[in-house]
Image 1 (cartoon, rainbow, N blue to C red):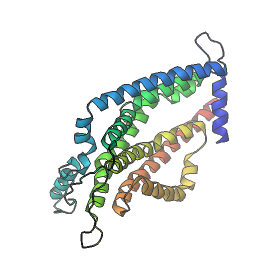
Image 2: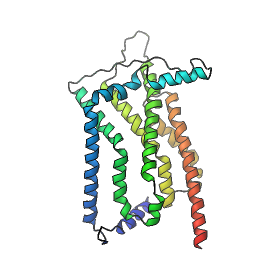
Image 3: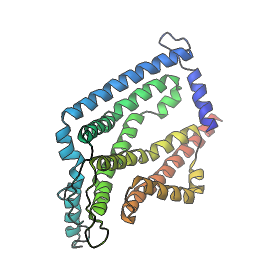
Image 4: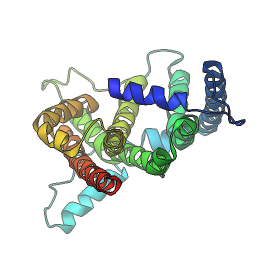
Amino acid sequence: MALLLDKLSSTLNRNENANGKEMSFIDHLEALRWHLVRAVLVWLAAVIAIFIKIDWVFDNVIYAPAKSNFISYTALCSFSHKLHLGEALCMPPINIELQGNTISGPFMSAISIAITGGLVLAFPYLFWELWKFIKPALSPKEIKYSRGSIFWVSLCFFIGGAFGYYLLAPFTFNFLGNFTLGTTKAYIYRPTLDDYTDTLTNIILGCGIAFELPVMAYVLGKIGIISADFLRKYRKYAFIVILILAAIITPSPDWTSQIIVSIPLLLLYEISVFICAKIDKQKIKEEKEWS
């Protein structure tokens, strides 16, 4: 951590403005202010666009994983039949009915959906603004290493979000929606609208952030904080952390959902080891050429 802070401090000291003069702390704050203003404006535009179409977004995006005809349910069942597995991958039908216990519930849920959806929709631009703020402080070599970072960060985030939406969320809702307590039907399963939307957004955002692991490994490997040997040495501890992270991301306690999350995260960890190994070989090659 200290190495990372020293790196950021040294690079910020090299930051220059358009006139070629070294930027002061106030200049940095002014630049950051305009980056934040532009990012917030784009985010608000995405929020407003989603709120205008909130009925369509709720029916076709938010509430879709709770319907029995959701694409993931039909695709898994069709895949099971093609593999001659019968109904092995077919999940029980689900039909979750939502309820509200406050007058402002639907409106506040619409605001929450628009805010979260705007964040997901504007994510590439928000990261681009962050990159534009950091870029002047980087050396030409560091800029070369970070080429294409906006694309890869956005791609990993959207792949993770899609994984959570199309695979993890259906398993989670199917398990929770078909779980019964007792045999007398004294308990009626009817979750609140807020509970449903919060669960879905936590799954999508959690998976999106978790899938940034290879990008994080690349950055830390380039800075020199981690290496392939370091990741291999602490692999067994990392697996435990991944299992804990999978339990946090999945709101349902069933082992199926946790395995669904754990397997891709373990694969991403091994990809991170491979990325760091390539970086280590490149560093050794550059050191030999320099010497």
